[in-house]
Every structure is written in structure tokens, then in C-alpha cells.
Image 1 (spheres, rainbow over the protein chains, first blue to last red):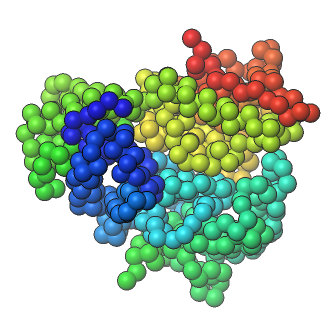
Image 2 (image 1 turned 180 degrees about the vertical axis):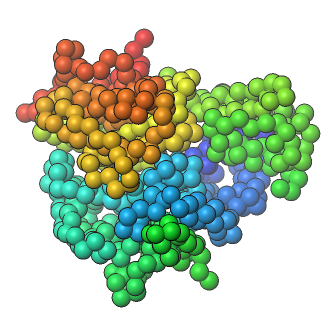
Image 3 (image 1 turned 45 degrees about the horizontal axis):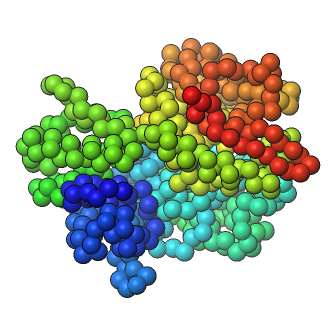
Length: 275
Length: 275
């Protein structure tokens, strides 16, 4: 790369860091890339850090020493996250979203990459400190959320299929009972999709009793994998605590009170925002 | 936002533009945001433009006049795109990827958000000039590619389901014949997922004879929608021209010569790179 002026270098370093979240970049790599002294690079990083942290974009963590460098950790602070989720809750309360069975139509919202990016960033903030190897979701509507989260955490994604038609070599299938509908369903994952002893973050779009998530947890044990966390976009509060199959999860929104006759619903921020 | 020094403002403007591709931002909005004169903002934008265009990140288009402003168009130039795809082709040629029926295992690659981001950016470059309202894909493996492309084009995504169990109000289902396996299959889309007369970009991960893509094209006609473009990540060159159901598409890689016995394959850059 040709030598840049400081102003141009700040622009370039900003885009370079934003494109590489959760990745340690050594000062030497930057100094080489921009043919600049490490002291200049350090000054630039201090400016970028101040802006990122001041604007609530996340942290720029500097690690000192020979193996040192800088790592960008995208975050949304809780106040900004709550503001985003309040807006999402208002959208989710629109009466035309109420579907049979107390589900909500939210495919149009899941179809907006920028909105999913905001939600993924909130999940990435919630799980930034966890030791995670891979993010898992089940097709179909959890996929955009899982990828948005994975992008900010710099992690790979595995997608569990809802059938056993996996044409990708040997697969592990399990039957699970959807906690709310009580129907027996199947989910599968190709054997080679997940390394032994992986630490897995489960992300899904909607959770009622938690049968689907519990199915994924059971599937993980077949791979000697462990659950590093569970994040759901919207949980249904229409489920009694005794019906809830899962206790340890983060929800960003909670659907309470669905009146199928009047199509009135209430959606409030989820347990992530509880004090 | 508090008034920033130029160096900090350059960092902030860079991240602001990167987060809002294909979005017109007026100089007035920037001037208000940073409490700065439009002349200073224009100078900053000139620096950012030079870096973005010099580094092959895309274009920063300035529109003059009262309704003017600046728009960031993410692009990967063809040389860089070809370099990326050469690397992907080498990965795709690994013998352990060959599956029965001449398909390739590429779920692990699709599971890498950063790689999908690069591919999505290439698609976004290829279709940047087209008039598109929405990106369509079919579950499951096309979804990450569709979202990556949609993120860079600032467009919504609709996902066609491979069954008719759509629980989202009335849906349109069609039967289609997979060109390569000759099996009859079903795909569905909720009636409310797509507005009338939408201009649709179809994105998918793999195309053999093109039956699935043709199915999506047929489905679009049920919505009075039109095809604005078709992009496939990998096409199979094992299909004779007379079998190919579709002519007008962009492919980024082409699988030629699959030897199921020796597991030798050849994957070359797709028709997007043909002169």
C-alpha cells in the first residue's frame, strides 16, 4: 500500500478495523501496511478508539507487549440497544402481525439486513466476553440473526436442518417435541459440520416453550459440544414457567398478552434488559 | 453529537458511510451532524473518496445541487474479485468435497460470514447499476449469500420456502422440476412477502440445470414481479447447453469435470469473469 497522509490513513485504518472485528492486529502489521512509525500508528489508534467508544460503536482494546496489538470489539451499549428494541417492539405490536397459535409474523423484519445487523450487534455485545467457537441456528428464520451475530463476533455458523434429508455425508438426527405444539419433529446436522468439543452459541428468532432450542442443546451433546450461550430475538411470555424447558437464555424482546380476537399484543424488551 | 476535530470526524464519517451503503446522505445532514461547514465536509469527503476508490472499496458518488449529497457504493473491482474467486476455487477443488450426484460440499465455506461478505460484495458490484427492489433466495444455503449481497446493496430479502407449510397467511406454492434430478418439488412464498410489480434479484448458491432458479422465476410471475438479475455462486458445467433452463445469469465459479471415482474436480472462475 502506498504511503498515506495521516488523514487518509485514519480513513483506511477505520475501515480496516471495522471489517475485522474480534481480530488481533499487531502494531507491526499496521506499521508495515502504512509504512509508518509505530508511534504514529498508536496516535491514530487513540483517535479511532476515542471516536468508537464515544459514539458507542464498541471497544478498541489495545494489548501491550511483543504479542500486542489492537482488537476491535463491536458493541451496542445497553441504552442504545434498549432504544433500538423499543422501536422493534412497537413494530412487533402492529395488529396485522398476529398469527394463529399466538405467533407473530415478523418475516418482513427479518428480511431487513440493516435491522438484523443492529440485532446481531446487540447479541454480539451480550456474548462478547464468552469463549465461543461457533454459532448454531436452525433453519430458516434464525439464519439471518445468526449470521449478523457471527459477523460481529468473527465466528463461523452451522445451520441445523429441520429434516433428515441432509445430503452431506453422515448426519446426526434427533427427534424433539416442540414444547408448545407437542408435535414430534426432526432436526439434523451433518457429522462434519461441528468439531468435537466445540463451544456453541445458539441463536434463534422465536422461543415459546423452548422445545426447538432444547432440541439443539440435545443435538450438541451428540457432538460432545457444549452450550456457551443461548440468545433468542423474541420470547413468548405466554408460557408458564413450569412449561419453559430452558432457563438460561437471553431474550431481546418478550411477547406478553396476545389477544387473538382483538389482535392486540404487547411486546416489551426481553430479559437482557432486566436490571 | 459533540463537535469533533477533523481527524475524529474523518473516523466517524468513514464508519457512518460504511454502515449506510447505497444511501444518499445530504451534505446538510453531515454538516448538522458534525456542526461543521459544508465546505469542511466536502473536503473530508474528498479524502474518504480517494481512500475508498484507491483501495478498491467502492465508489463515493457525489450528487451536486439542492437535493445533492453523497452515496457510498461498495464494490470489489474485477481484479480483486478474481483473486478472491481463485482462492475459493482452490478450496472447492479439495477432493473431500465431492458428493454423490456431482454436488460439492461447501456448507463449511457458506458458514464463514467474512467469506460470504466477500462474495456478497462481488454480487453487489455485479448488480450495483440495476434497478432492484428486493433480493430473493430459496432456503437454505442461498440465504447467507442473499443477505451478504443485500447488506451491500441496502435491499430487503425474501426467502422462498421449500415446502408448503408456510404458516404466514396465504401463500403461493408452485411445483417445479429440478432439472438435474427430474424430481417434482414444491416451493412457496407468503402472499404478503412481495409487493406487486417488484423488481427481483435472485441469488442462489448452486445451479445445475437451473430448475430451482427457474422455479423462482415462475413464482415471481405469480406476484407480477420481474427478474432484475440472477446470480449464482457456483454453477455446474457438467450440464449440456440444451439441458440448461436458463441463459441470463451471472456465476462466480464454475464446476467442470467431476470424477466421482478419483474425486478430482476442476473449479474455475464463472461467467462473470469472462471477457
